[in-house]
Image (tube, rainbow, N blue to C red; front, side, top):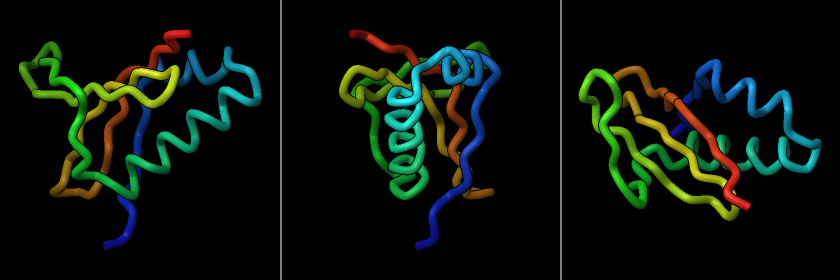
Length: 84
């Protein structure tokens, strides 16, 4: 299976822009992982404002909220947060 595309929300872009070069590289690795493993289950599930079930997964110091749209083969990355 080919890797999915991914999109990032504005909030993710703001975190990315404020991140150090090393943190950006970490985030790009996370985004790449999700695009290659679109069926990866999150550690928890959180509903968004529309009621959609979004995956929340921890990647080292990062928590990433996303949902896969399998019909168009795209991962929508809604939020990232650095915990440490």
